[in-house]
Amino acid sequence: MKSSTCRIVLAALAASLAWTAPALAEPGTPVKNAGFAQTERNSVGLKQGMSAEEVQKLLGKPRRTTLKSGGFAPDGVSQGTLQWTYAGADSSQGNLHVDFAAKAPAEWHVTGWDWATY
Image (cartoon, rainbow, N blue to C red; front, side, top):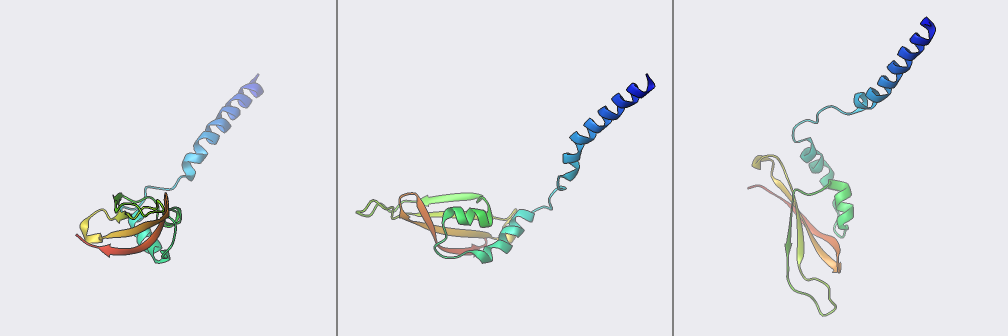
């Protein structure tokens, strides 16, 4: 009887450790603004002509987006621009603006980028 009780307790303990192991493997709380600092480091990899998907892989999701319509060319391609803004937590860190133009409908490619402070 004592042996079966010990097995049950050990099985329950093993099951509880299986549930807590992933929680122990999770990273700690990120340092404040670490995301923007990483974006700043990764921005050196920006290249003219990169697709929006490539930029998102490199820098992550932007904090803000802006779409400015400039009409359409005769072939149906947008003459507008798309701008993604990566912003720090405060104005002293500045903002990275990445500008895109469409080579074909819904196919945005980098035309330029700049750092700005407000």
